[in-house]
Amino acid sequence: MGRKIPMWQSILVLLSMVGFLVWGIVKDSGGEAHIALILAACVAGFISIINGWKWAYLEQGILAAINRSMQACLILAIVGAMIASWMAAGTIPSMMYYGIKIIAPGIFLFTACLLCSIVSLATGSSWSTAGSMGVALIGVGTALGFPEAMTAGAVVSGAYFGDKMSPLSDTTNLAPAVSGATLFDHIKHMVFTTGVSIVVALVAYLVMGFMYSSNSSVDLSTIDEILGFIEGSSNISLLTLIPPVFVILAVTLKLPAIPSLLGGVFLGVPLMFMNNAAVSTAIDKETVTYSVFNILNNGISMGVVPDDASPVIKELAGLLECEGLQGMFWTISLIMCAMCFGGIVDVTGIMSNIAGALLKVAKGRGGLVLVTEFSCIVVNAICCDQYLSIILPGRMYKEAFEDMKLAPKNLSRCLEDSGTITSNFFSWNTCGATMRTFLGVDSGYIPYAILNWLNPIVSILFGFLGITMTKMTDEEYERVIAEREAEKQAALKALEA
Image 1: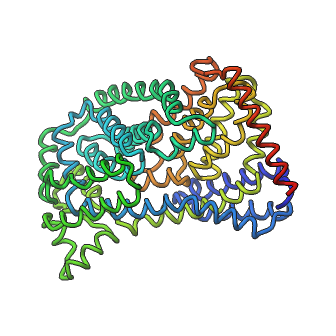
Image 2: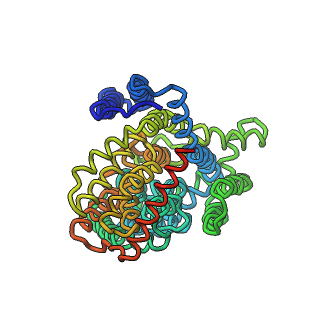
Image 3: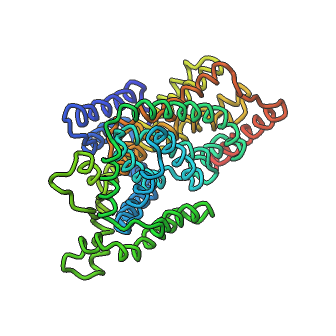
């Protein structure tokens, strides 16, 4: 291990990453962050080495960061195949078809957010929700005349609400584990801040939905044309909804996520053969077995767009195609590049330097909450990993919360109100890359993801005003101090050994 990296050099590393990303994404107008992140990792590595850090240690940090992201990469690849399976089976077209018939335009955004909240609450996964229900709702929104960014914002808000409030979610379990709270105390405590945020978001979606639908140019004849196009392009049947129902039930029953998603993939395969349009498009004089593998690997395009089709139909047709497992590797490679940078700044303590400096300027209870949530956002941007945005600030500020006699559930709530909820704001973060890939949108959806930017604001206000900022009892505080002293003594003994 090397010596502590000076603050000015830590700041230089962060500024280099911001500079490279601005150059790669904004100036180059290509939205490519891969090389920018690799260059930033090179700067971080160089500064670490001149401060005495061995390359072998930095490499282990990189590999550890990549290892943390491997489950996310596996899920991405499987969901890519699952979307292709469900598209070819008619599952996603059926969800779109029934959604268009049932959902009134005025309440569409409200309904989209609510549906995604329910699915995500049941599964504990914002990713699975966005990759299934979200994809279908984007199609429904397009058919009803809503911009994709607006629909994506409602989907993301609902998906993240359910994710952070579900006892099945990994981040919902991680935050109390880091802070020392219990799972259900943590969830109950989040009801106050997240509950206010989701109510405001749902009201806003109702207002936006009625305002936008009243100005929308989509009429009933266009809706009929859309329904006819979907019907002609795919097999529309309630049977095709079996795969998503299975996935929701499997995850609700606490079956592992990866086998559950694989089950969703393979349940779609026999339904493909009910879908004549899909199979005939894919076969193209090849064997049926090869065609199924080809669909899962490379995706499928559903339906043929007539030359005289309306612009809405042409746009909708783009949503009835996918790139399968292979289409996810751009996102997976982005995650790998991000982890190269994130791994170095984690193991060398660069992020701890920044967090420590922020802690020095925190004044009182509200200042501590503000600094904690700001740190979560910074870690999401710098380390590119949702889990680190909970773990690092959680480790840094745990004692500060204890010293103010604030119950652990206050810290765990702050970590989720900012770390979990803002992870999708950055396109190079694992969650940001995933949401953009699944929903086929750019960062323009962020203003419409009302819950995600409102929740941290509400949480900070609660901190300054002291609303539901629960204090520890004297007995709890004494126990915490005793445990902290025991941990220090154990660490000293281990060091001496």
